[in-house]
Image 1 (cartoon, rainbow, N blue to C red):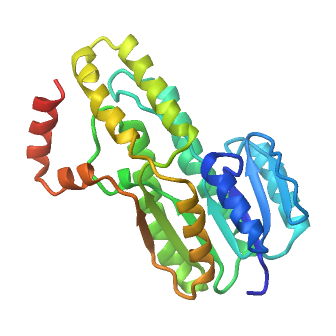
Image 2 (image 1 turned 30 degrees about the vertical axis):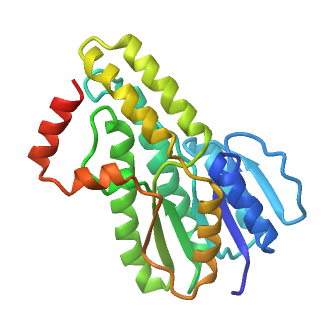
Length: 266
């Protein structure tokens, strides 16, 4: 490993902070990026406050990174937001926002830093178990972005094969972060404001609460990141703490899934 610089987005979030600390404890030089400041102080840590969806801020960030180092070992894309929203009743503004944050921030950063990566470098993209399965009602905005990330990661991996760069996607289940609190508050807001879906959303509350209580420790992601950085030949995908209920539903024909959602969530 000719360089031990790791660029990590979402560095101040639940997954990002735990991963940052794990990297620092393993002697990596970490360049953390987040929309919010960080209180991590370490000689091997540089933090940049940046909205990656803002072109001017992102270009300034890229310049700063290139001035700091001419080679990075890995890019870890953890920046992301969650939205629970109806495809019918939700706003196009919200859809555009989540696509910009969850997909385009990753796309642009990888594209603009690719010249600093070389043979055996790694790009790790945070997808979701949602990308694997047939999407649930009222999860469309989030599911769309994670399926975009999943497909993008596959194409990027196949192109990076020619460059010797390893591209890995993480298809994770729920982790214990502030994102889960946001899911609950967004559900309540949707329930209060819905015109068409009061009944199914009310029924969904118990199911959603049950899934949320199964959330896992973010350190599982931090440890997985270390493993991916250290192994010679990482897998192309890692699935961690995926929902058994979603896995069961996905094993059924899609028409049967439609009928189950209609009859159970009513």
